[in-house]
Length: 466
Image (cartoon, rainbow, N blue to C red; front, top):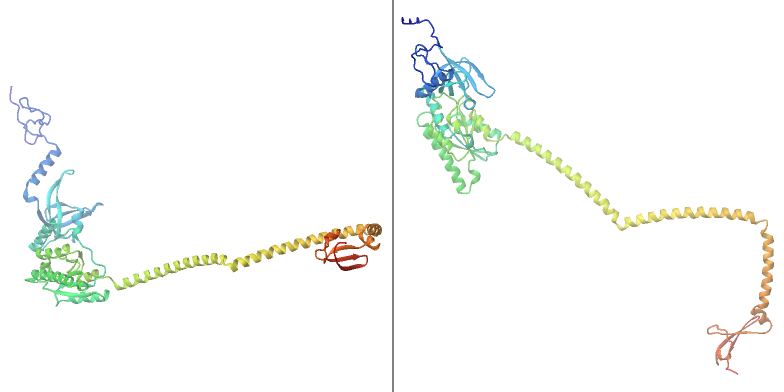
């Protein structure tokens, strides 16, 4: 038999063809007629991923390019592309890193992005996972800034958990800045306008040029020593309660002292809360991340360090008004209670009770009088009615009654002691007790006696029994 001719190069291999003499291994993908190994999409993606991750040079990249197609997801992650004349690179910037940055990507800007290259397996694309960005053109100084920032942040020097709150109304504020610049004047002006009660002490230092870093560190230490001295000698009211570190705006080179690691560590280790007011609003230094509070400008730092007297006076006025309202309400309540107690006590006074009793008796007397008058009126009417009924028969009955009375009187006189006395008898009684004497023994000698006869009485004295 003749040998099967080789297919031309432009012919695709028969993927389902297996050579008769091809050795197969259980579990391994079958090879094509030309020894081709078939792989899945996931396998190819993992191969590319592992190759990228194995390259140390791709773990931290600095890539410069023009920003395009910026979008921010609902989760806060930013997605954009970096492009040059021939290629583009997909970039992902996660929310936490993006919010910690003072600079944000915008389409058309040329930036330098720092991050690592990796594969997003779900879509099978490689992309730059951005950790920080900065405008292009800063050169080595910007790169050193980002490197120092990443290193110090990894140590926890910029953690929000170590930030201290500012005192509400500090009595003394220390300022670390140059005594010859406009910053010192602006800070004093703002403090005097907002809170005239505060005292300001200056710890002067050089804020730019050679030796500025060491001068700033020394100025911070001077403030700490002065605060400690005041507390030691019992002058707590003279000790600074907060420190402002400030300077005016400038280029990255002008602000280099505030990006120095020694200054950053001095700010972190400062015993007082620190307000950073370095540069203009667009300027960002490492001292801003290390300070307890970051202000956009030196004047803004002074505003953050003290309250506004206008706001305080307004709040005091509101509190005073509310306090007066509460006092008036409490007084009204107490007065009502006192009035109720007074009424209750007045009801218990003797004169009040007597007056109430007199009024009640008068009322009862009036009622009784009205009832008696009514009863008399009714009785009088009944008497008049009976009188009318008795008038025709009353005279005859009266004559009979008189006749009967005279007859009875005559009979009574005949039977009474008067008739006996008229016949010459007498009634003897003792003067001492008026007792009738029936036995001479009842009137011993010398007893005074009274003799009652028909027409009068005669006195007598007993001379003894005969």
